Image 1 (cartoon, rainbow, N blue to C red):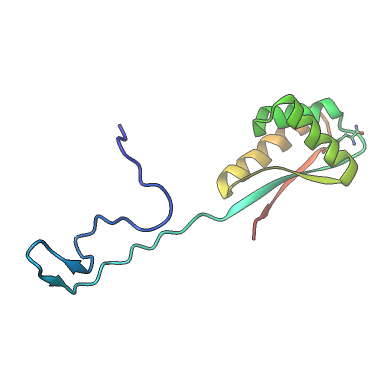
Image 2: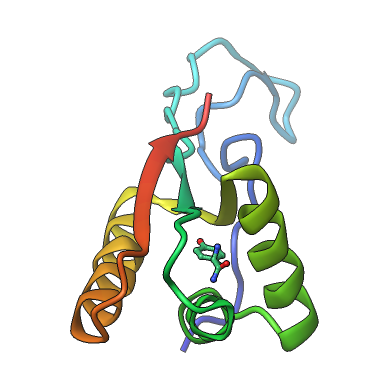
Length: 122
Ligand code: TYC
């Protein structure tokens, strides 16, 4: 079981090589190994408007795959209906890819032309 978790940001201070003085006043000039951490690229999952997919189906998609409540889902659906495109959520590459596939699969199986894509955040 995980008892502690290192939160984001700077590298761990637990390296024995940090510059400074030890208890005996000895100056440690060794350099600390620089552990390079990198945040993953994030991807927006988008849905596109069309003239045929029922509004209720789009709301269901947003609830089921994007963890929106009824109000949030309705707002996003209406935004897409009016503007042509909207963001369902922002995820790492593989999660975004999975969600796009889930949406496209359910839309196809219900014979709706709904389109779902992803794009990299800057
Ligand atoms: N424009 C559709 C209609 O009038 C509703 C709709 C909304 C479809 C959002 C797709 O991504 C979409 N039935």
